[in-house]
Figure 1 (tube, rainbow, N blue to C red):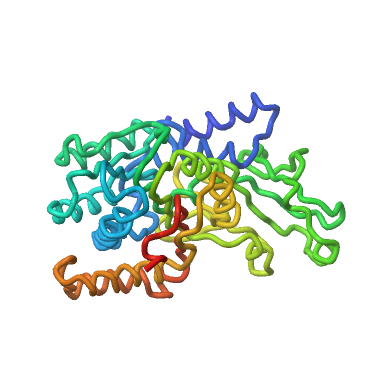
Figure 2 (figure 1 turned 90 degrees about the vertical axis):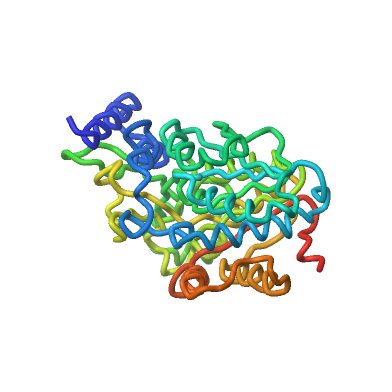
Length: 369
């Protein structure tokens, strides 16, 4: 029996044990992360031109080089981090490419305090950890691994397209009942299908009467308690420094617009997007837009203050401008590097859809400049 069929049968067994239906979040957890079978467990070659989707990391090493410069010149100058050990913690590292790019750039600046830096990858998957260890072996004990976030981090916690990969709940608006109905997953007529679940909608989704009266039947909205909980744990672990992520997402009010009536969850395969979300589990990527309002609020409750909440293009442009003010502090801009920067920042590529959320202990050094 092939791996895809094994995963289908395993999900069906979970459905049966649960009485015939589970939440979409539980289905996604297995479809994406089931050990040895889930989509992110298959192969490291799902990213890039030959894979299913592209990321800022797959554009080339420039993204990592810009982040290394930012870490060296901003994080190192943050309140409480001007001396002593400084840790870079990455979650969602996939095959370790971003870590390699960042570390290589930092090694080139070894004379500027690089010796006090260490790199930790938070990776619960033994499969992905093996990919990462193979790629990063030459960095020796400068790189460490753990299955969970450390209790205390002094430095920067970073991720790229991590939050959008957390499982989500799916809710459908019932105009007749004037309430949100959670859509679970069942097995029907030889395939996975949607089924209504008897769960209560989150209280924060209560809508004004005037909006309830016009919200169309079947309007879909997703919610990811797992992503919010992860961000809150990371915020709690951060003792000094910054928590930062790059991802595509929206503010809370942007989800309730006519163009989002089908929700934001999509399936990706060979760079093509599909709304057929429940076919081919383990063979397609499932991803939904991040609710940056909910995520940011979780870190605010842990005492973090705003640093950046903006388009990726603006954030990277700020780093570019900083490199120009310090001659010799960054590699020369060859034609391929200029093209890579355009891909990272142009509105038709990653510049518009990708956003940066950064929160920290105290104010950002650059925001005080």
